[in-house]
Length: 284
Length: 257
Image 1 (cartoon, rainbow over the protein chains, first blue to last red):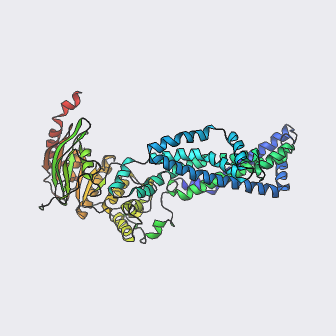
Image 2: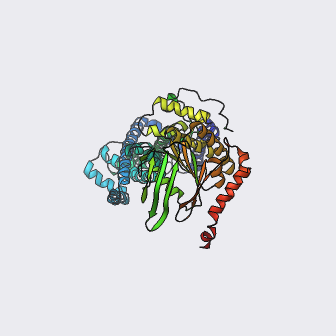
Image 3: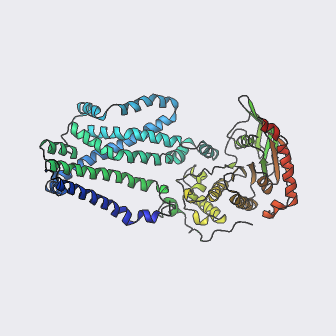
């Protein structure tokens, strides 16, 4: 893993490659519209879409902010509740049994159905969107955090006990960090779909604006360039949502991508002595 | 040998449900002594190990450390397994000081001591590495340093080098002897490797399988410090032959089923 870091993290691969594939996609899109002479109300050109974004940028920017806000609040709330759910379930077989049906039921009911009910309960504002997004991220987080907690080696717990550690410290230092990797897998998987969740919320009923509401309006007016403008920006939001999770993952789980702790890590700053260059020879 | 043994095992036995895993065992280990426990798999050596470390309660018998009855209680001995059990999210130094971290913030002198251990025993350059960046042998060294840092006079090692290739294992054995000669801890070393048992120990406890029992305790009267040449010395071979006979005169029974 450390050996190919320079290759993987180089600017070319990290930035240029995705830009290139994006340019290719836009190119193919423009070509298809041109070659098949597709009318604008069916599929606008990339140029027309860009123009639609530019001309109504103020409204679209507000919409993006609103939709991203819905995503962020719902995502954080759903993750926190899911995490606490998993920890509670891992405590005892009884709690596990008791909460399992609720967990499954939360996934079995279609989001759209829940969305309609949520509007009745919570109105047209921010609240139902947050709940929908939270419901989407909740299940994968619970499942993966449970997996992480179960992955802790029994012998590791015994070792910590033999060192005289309390249950709270064992949780803090051994069980909790073991959930980080599966937790972030869950967050990455649900990040993009959570943006979709916010859009579903806006479609059901909304007075708060947002990209989803904008899309619905543009679509009803057969304003295809504006529809595509919001679709393109929703794609951007999805990427931003995903990248935000990845950025947090990088920052919080450095051992997954690095061989050596960051120079500014707490322990490295506390170890005053510089590591010696030559290792001591093996005793003969 | 001083009057008070570091570790005294009196009539310790253990049954699991109906099966008898360990017949009553008596053993005394002197302070600073290196004792190997050797035997085929299923001879109850790991059961004995778990009882001494306090993870498992014996069905009968008592365990004394420094004359104090510690039967069924943990925290009196440092121990180490074949699995290194390093936490992947902690660096080498953070793994070495895990014992302190489990009691709160690691004090600066503990941190310094941990770094000193790493530097003294060949991992000075790697204190801030994560375990995944280390080789198997290096990881086991970190695990041993974590055991040393816990600062118990008695160290229980359960096949710590069992997962390493034979070359690395020999390096690690010599390294362990170097550490032991400097630190003078009391070591009980469980292994199934007869060469390893003789090479390291002052005494070898030979166990027989199902139910496990101590067959014989042999004194290894070979000079220290020990080097690789010892592995082919006549005294070594004679001991090895004796232990092989002790273990394998039961072999036909074991293979018959």
